Image (tube, rainbow, N blue to C red; front, side, top):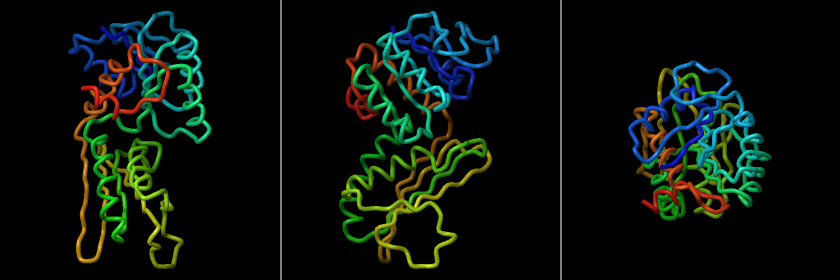
Length: 253
């Protein structure tokens, strides 16, 4: 049994994961962290991880980068692994996560779905063939109108996968409205759409001469992210200090 502390338990993803774990015989949420306790949870809810008096095997965080310092301190002090699912971390915070992984097991992913993490590998393989032959690469992501950050962490992860495959030669371009010039071959365009209740759509476009190849992933509910987070938590339980990826979870299944 994996005992989970759910940070951001009363947010949309926190509630989704709570419902998923109810049907999972191998996991249990023993405590939640949220500024507001709605009184609907079957586990105690604390306003901050520093207030939590319940022991857990792993923390899942689907809240905000603002709480990162407290989460890292808690994980290091109590040797409790962390599954970090928030997006919008600063460069300084990313460095803090890397430093913390030397003391405690940390898994950070911009997207927890099995499909997206498979796509990350596919676009790397495609880039080595298509981008190497001069295909332009563009990424278009679409999300609901309540999402705060843009572009999405997943779009950036996809861009990073392509860029890594090509020796990090691309410059990311987020806005061409002020540019009156032809597209440079070393550009990688990333466009964000916000509207309605779109859960998450991502297209990676390889555009060549007279042909276009598009890799698409569409999430129809947030459950795909919740299931991945729970799988990650079960995988991370008892792991030694280190930096882990969803690819590690997939490989272990």
